[in-house]
Amino acid sequence: MRTQVAIIGAGPAGLLLGQLLHRQGIDTVILERRSADYVLSRIRAGVLESGTVRLLAEAGVDARLRAEGLVHEGFAIGSANRRLRIDLKALTGQTVTVYGQTEVTRDLMEARAKAGLVTVYEAEDVALHDFDGSSPRVSWVQDGVRHDLACDVIAGCDGYHGVSRASVPAGAIQTYERAYPFGWLGVLADVLPCSEELIYASHERGFALCSMRSHTRSRYYVQCAADEDVLAWSDQRFWDELRRRLDPEAAAAVVTGPSIEKSVAPLRSFVAEPLRFGRLLLAGDAAHIVPPTGAKGLNLAASDVHYMSEALVAFFASGRDRDLDDYSTRALARIWKSERFSWWMTTLLHVFPGTNPFDRRMQGADFDYLESSAAARTSLAENYIGLPY
Image (tube, rainbow, N blue to C red; front, top):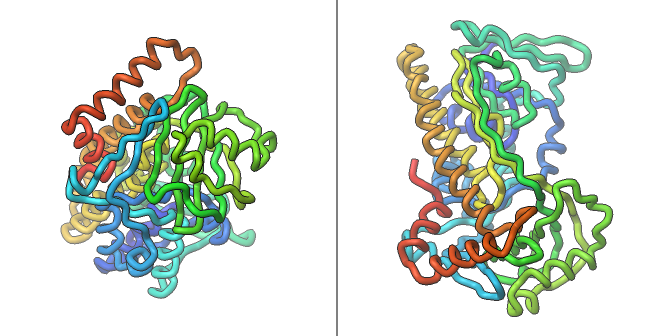
């Protein structure tokens, strides 16, 4: 088998890259170690930056997003029973859109299938070969048979635990990481959201987030221990704890119901440098992880794909390796700014082990500054709707 770009990973990053390249006439094969149903079962983020929405339109997969996505012109941030609305539209002229990552993935899968493009699911023992030269290839096993795929470039979009980054020689890559000493306990429920816009709440008992997937499906989170046992949390215990951490108006508006999904997500900041190793390029969670506090995970993967697709289009037009050179530098410049924002939001809103009264007063001062300064609110809004690319 042969293709121009072998894409490792059929999550939203890999699928979006495949769709953008297809529209430029570039052939791709996607390899995914999980089944299609498993990929679609992942419960992930749901807030899309305006740039991500534009990129999905460029990929031709935004019809359902435009029909079903919830456009939000602002969000709320709360502290000590206060709530401050950040008016994104007034401060930046832009908005964000609530549309689940699962739905983005589904739209991309359907577009790829409609175009008759090749995606290999349940590919076992995937291995990357010879990407330090001009003739890379990928091998894998399916149904007991080993397959080999020759290509011009390999795009590693297979996540933090994937084979792509792990295939890079240790001396060629440097990683930066911070593991946070807490997680998020999340609940998905078919109940009316307590607010029309997201609420990020700081409380002495820990952070809470009120979000949604639609007008009738809500997604809520509370800060918990990193090793929290999800089985120890009944639905009633979760709803009670959520209400404790919200301002009185939001708490009174919470509609409870049985959870349809409940899980604990650890929080981590991670960046790998560089993102290009000969003919292997990394993107998405293979390249970086951000805490979910700033809603940057999927959006940052989308900006990676934007830069990578531009580099690949130039490369196949010219045949010159130097057209791949700028990908890592361009992507990392935006990655580190998004990492900074997610780190800042996490620091502002969470209770850390060992937090003392001084730390809490500093968090309060940060919130006071946001209330009193249009410049501070504008900076927050600019980062939240997404830095340009």
